[in-house]
Length: 283
Image (cartoon, rainbow, N blue to C red; front, side, top):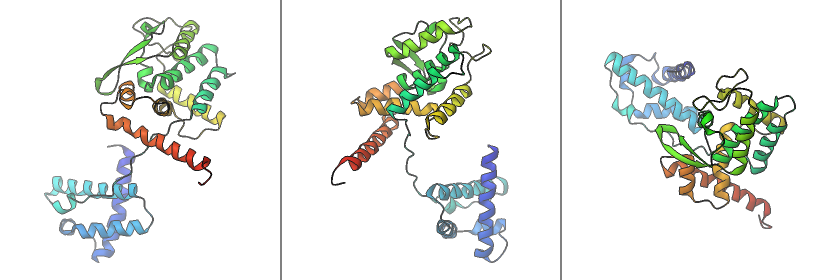
């Protein structure tokens, strides 16, 4: 378990035990914890709700308590099925946060014209970012390309999450960006070696592209949500806004389930509502 997760569970349980001292009128023992009922836990969660905690925080508190009871079952044989059946608040799905069309264009332009970057480094970054926005690739997928992809093909065969293979067509600007980088790269790009290289010639780290996007969003005044993955979100959202079929977008993104892709319809609907509210004379 991650260190931060352990710390969060510890903080949650410390607050829970503090509540139980007042609720039970005594120090909570293992035996007392075993006798707790669902209504006792609900009373605690209700108290924290009154403190202003969000649904996500309440759900995490309940997760911490359930983890405690799983440990008690393993370590001490104390079972409390009633606690295990408790359900937390349903969380609203987190919508993707794509960059706008104008922001995507500005990002690519700024990356290409950065005065402090070596020409081949600028060309490399433009090529990678173009694959994310123009091809909908994940950053790991873009960095998995090899020298065999030069010159850039019209279609890429990508192996994504879960080993799912998809064919991604590359539009002309993306192919041109890749080929421009290939001509400027000072390192020998072999068919089996990484296409995108770091400053010392090794495979490019995703952290370099993440840092590059951080710098670009600072220059352009974009929010922190303008990450490399936001360009992939933008790819899907902008295709949908321009009439692309949802099944086609699913295939291009490599989603196993259409429900995963359908989240972009909510993003597009939100944008349309905002435009409507801003433009309609009766809004």
